Image (tube, rainbow, N blue to C red; front, side, top):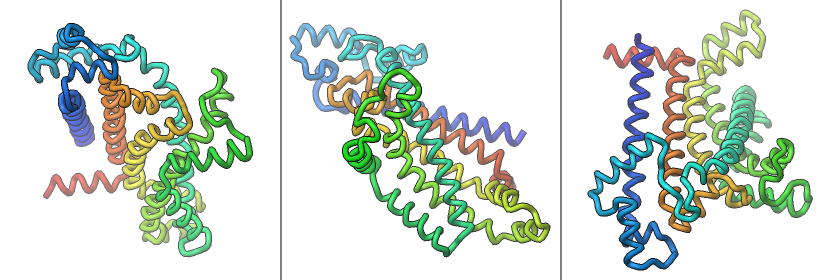
Length: 321
């Protein structure tokens, strides 16, 4: 019953967050300087008759809240309007770009989690030794380097000088070719994200390496791998929480990396849509990114609650207090 209450609480918080963010995102159209109809037209010239037609089409003459609730109602039916540039529905405009970004984000996230946790555990296990200092130095450099700067360096070395990888694009439709083209962008995203996870994992594991239960497990001559898994389970709280934050930063960094490598993903589409003032596309993409970030945070909190016993004990302590 307690677990069900926690899950419901997180889902309610997720719903409230999305509702507030949707209101803010929709308000951006009205916060933009000038006439909203001219913003929707973009850089094209339009006659007064055309502007009036746009106001009628998008119900711009209605009150703000009427427009907002109409937009939310249409969004509930997956109707986000038409793109200003292409004239096609927003969902159709984005569908071809979304798969590319999902592939890039998933590959980078998996690589970041593996590298961050493995090297963070190694650094904690070998505290004060050369490997620990080397991993800390790499983590410091990784967290200091912006993703687009790392991407430009990777492009210059491995694409231009060595010629091992392509300079831009995603290649053909074959799986091997897509992986080949997405390797450098995935590495550029992984560098900073895995460095953050290294530091968090090392800090969390240091509290467990010299704990009483670790000494007891060593006295029972249990295998080092079993001891490490037990330590990771107890240190999973901050690691999983940071993974949710890392996913948020990963989504934000994707915009710059896709632009750097000329990858036709959601990030590149968002940047070009902002430049061309394609408001329906910008609103939808921003809402989708906010949805994934809030959802990841809610799922991470739920995972921490069920995996880490300490979080459940802390929750019961707060309830009793």
